[in-house]
Image (cartoon, rainbow, N blue to C red; front, side):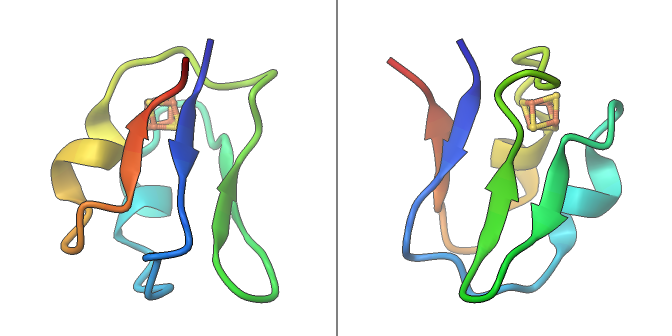
Length: 57
Ligand code: SF4
């Protein structure tokens, strides 16, 4: 399982700077989380100003 960033992302970059395993990278239209690296800590979801990050299914 891994956290996911949806299209509400405004590309502020807050999530990428708090991820302990550098699983978040900047894409063309939004930031993306590498599911192979994410350890489900939830740090990114806690800092996202628009609530665009949620736990995966
Ligand atoms: Fe990184 Fe934690 Fe967010 Fe996964 S849940 S992308 S490990 S900050």
